[in-house]
Length: 238
Image (cartoon, rainbow, N blue to C red; front, side, top):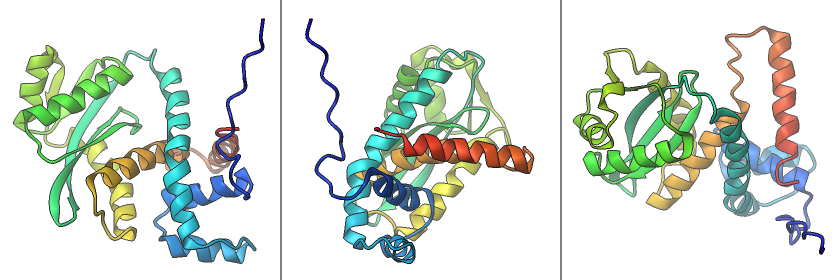
């Protein structure tokens, strides 16, 4: 019986080491840095690359790393059936026009899904919820704001009995927009809808991977969890 072929390495056509590529992608996506900020910080470490190389690497490897992170996390969390989801939408300007970034997080602040649309009507809400339910399964409870599109979409999906609406009940997902907003300002906004969708999805998975809830744990536990997250990142696509 022939031995199955090993998947080709995504780094095979690049002269730089995979460790440097992973470092560049992590710095650009995780922190509110511009392309030239990343170039300057790497120059201090003796790594000489152009800011356009940073752009190329993040566009090429960012989605690959994010997909690998998401695949591992979804497989671990899919069997957990006591989920409470929080759904919200926030406007983002793309080329001077308003678009809407829909986001779903669980009761611990884990970002489950990010989806960009031009409207926030029932049709858009339905597409967003179907995509989230297909990937993550059905939760025990879904918390939303007062937008009527959620109620109409959940009525069609047959889970309107799971909806909860409260004045401060949705603070969990409201706070999840803050890291993305800081990153958005550093990038000087977006020019295309597909670039917003791409970056929002990658940023959400990288944020999930390195978010250690440091305000809830002691210093030693935080350092241990941080080291584990960095070690796992260095082994992505290995």
